[in-house]
Image (cartoon, rainbow, N blue to C red; front, side, top):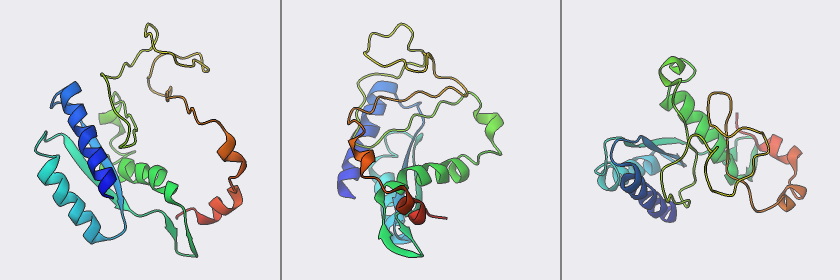
Length: 168
């Protein structure tokens, strides 16, 4: 998707500006075909990898289709692509001991950074909701941005249909 390619380029560029060349950033992208994955790798190598050797690309299968159905659900790519990267890119759970102090930040390519992340939000001035009582990101204690669109979408969600579509 050319729009996501452009958004990813901008995201990597922002990471370079904010964090410098030493931060690890991986784009996880689902591709329908091997040819799509090869073209994306070529684009990544030509435009992104030259910014930093730590700017990586991990391609995954397309998780929007299920063999037993003609239905497509685009939003399966994010959770199943993330799982694919954790298992095949980071080799989890086998390499867990090497990554025990690693913090993973999951972002969409259309999200932009203004400054580095804070691991401890105790003394931050941002308006954020502390519903869990936790103010620090650490093992077993994840944090996330607030979802400001409300819950109206969930009423139209057919969970039974989603379970039928779930990739293996």
